[in-house]
Amino acid sequence: MKRQKTDLSSLTEEQLLKTRLCDLGLQIKGTWLEECIDDLYKELDGKGIKFHPACYLADEWLAPENEPVIGIAFFLAHPGLKSLEYKMMQEVEGGDKASCMKLLRHEAGHAINYAYQLYKRKKWRTVFGHFTREYPDRYKYRPYSRSFVVHLEEWYAQYHPDEDFSETFAVWLDPGSNWKEKYKGWKAMEKLEYVNDLMTEVSKTAPKKKTGIKFWNISKIKMTLRTYYKRKTEFYAEYSPSFHDHHLNKIFPKDVQGSKRKAYKIISKYKKSILKHVSFWTGERKYIINQLLKNLIKRCRELKLETTSEDIYPLLQITSYVTALIMNYIYTGRLKREK
Image (cartoon, rainbow, N blue to C red; front, side, top):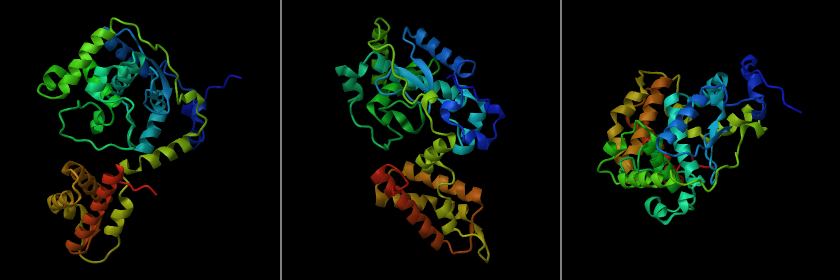
């Protein structure tokens, strides 16, 4: 029996959260995503690449391993779902034309890698590393490394050889990247030049694998949106603005009596000292610690936290808290320790 299409615009948020993903009745056709995909195909044509990876709606952005297809996050196919995504996650990945194109170019790199089985080549392994290397749960990136291109956030090229290739491909494909000038003198230029030569060869051959299985296809996922966001918010908890709230409220309790000073000003005042000493004793890069301190300062300001204590007491607690988070990051790749 054919499912009746759900009118998402008429649903309340509560009704929407009770809806199964497979019942959302979403499709790419007729949405703004069509234009983005057409632009991707034009960019591939402009580089002489005739293979156009098929696109479909999935539970997240992805190119399933060894499948030459592109999964696009389903919430981009409807404005109501984009709004819900923003409310739940405080961001919409690929929510505008520019960011959508960046992600499409990246996923196209994966799809073309799998279609032509480029990762099996000896030189590919020499340039990028072994494709079969296990994906870590988290990765520690070097922000100032010139061995990798910078395309997606958090220096994603440093995650895995497959991601390194896809990020390099995306920069090479982007008509506005000006990669020959931007990466002049970088070691990453060797990768870009290799991709350039490789794609010249690819443009003259047919892919070894033209079609692929569309894993995590939205039309087949039976979980509700409520369950989807419960799992998603738990997984990305440390990226949420409220991640630090419980601990910050303990360090800077409300309703205290006496002359008050703003918490964010205390952290800002001693930021350089905290950064220096936490980096020295943990061995972690200052960049990571600095980003954490900036987030704490911002959140203290948003929560309007204050203290009546002398500087030494909240300073000791903040330094201890930052050290604990950084040690979790060093040993697990996450700020949040697994239970």
